[in-house]
Image 1: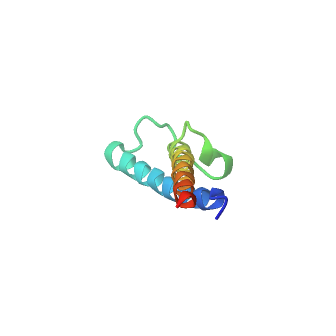
Image 2: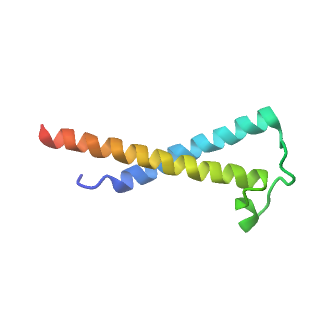
Length: 85
């Protein structure tokens, strides 16, 4: 495999967004809705970071992107080691 980009993208986003949703569930269990005035909604309102749902959706996206970067670096370095052998 020459380019691990798709493997890293799918694996990293799925893992990271899953961890982001667990972060949101833990946040909800510990804080309730907290200081968020609105729970959230459908469509574009679901991505408004001023709502609880929007905050969690953005947390999931950020976790996914970070895990993608980490996995892409790790798989790339692994491929370099394997190609030397």
